[in-house]
Length: 368
Image (cartoon, helix red, strand yellow):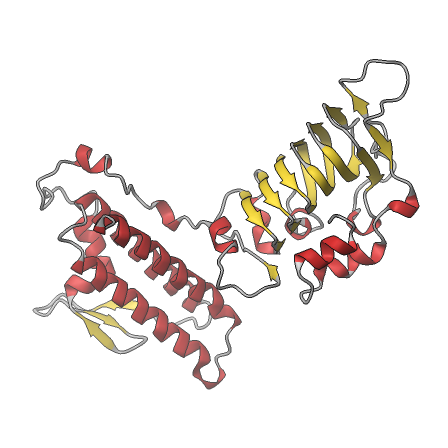
């Protein structure tokens, strides 16, 4: 039987993520007919229920983790208040403390329900905050708590990569927001079509695509155009039979261990290691470099991805093979003829077609 505190930790993470998604969806709901109000009430009920569950779990959850859960609930409450304040300047969908009298209760004005103080997420946070110097109920010191296996949940950090692969999501294009991430990391995925929206533009300090099989990843929107922010750097590793449209990279791109795939990218520098049978559609301001590669083909970046790039400053065809020192041309790479290149229609229409699954698009692109 699993450890109860570990089981509760997993349950708490799942519930927090679900409530966060509901809050982010508020802006898409109509205020007509009470649709948005119903969602707010559901969110408030979810926070209240989760707060009660934390209280019920105090017997086996260490004080250190109690503080972490309380901080998470407090942050979630603040996020809800911030979201609802955008819809009405004086939104009534907020947690408002009553005057400190004998009852010392907290009012949830959105649902007109009153919680007991021990169930209020903010009071729970206060009682478990690091500023409260009362000893833990179980007698453990803070150093021992810091060594607890569960650890803290800083800032409600979401695992977007895990969310992408949720089995309950319908087939079609996955659009993870990466709205609270600092960088973009997509890994250990199979058979998915992933398209990043504009909300991911602030998470492009670095990017990585790792261990993907028969996937389509399109990162054009958040990294290109007037509203996008290019990746500072991008790493692609251990990818098979996939189509990667990587957008724009201000710095270097490192491609390692990729096989039977298509990579589309605009970058300052590109280095390719240990790759086989990869077609690279490229805009590069320096000579692309390959090492220990076979069957590489290079083509210019498709016109629809050029945006404001300087077509004259594109050295896509000036490939240097660092492992081929002979005077004759390297047999490890070649320039792709125009008739073999993926047609324009696939880039402009097929890739964004939500009715096509990843396997169908990969077949049209001759990747599988």
